[in-house]
Length: 84
Image (cartoon, rainbow, N blue to C red; front, side, top):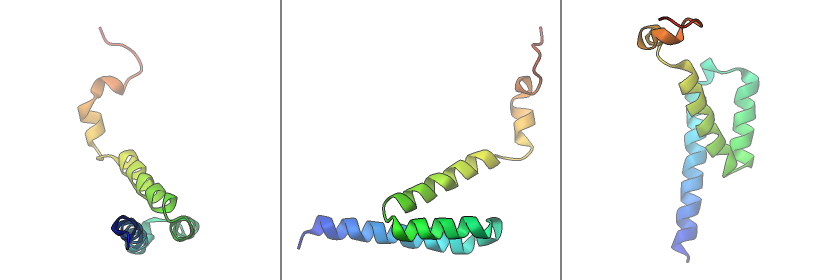
């Protein structure tokens, strides 16, 4: 038996399980339509579904940021005018 194929299958099944478990745990913060979309993508697209969900989580984490820290970290970016 080809061990690389077995490893490939195990990795993809693990990614699918991770995605479904993560959706189950965080379903309160997502809309019902978005939950079903990701569940169907993860199940029917075994490679692109979990990878897309991971990138979706990364994008969501970057957008959220740290509340309150944005104003103190880059004060020069808050105002559109230049200060001399």
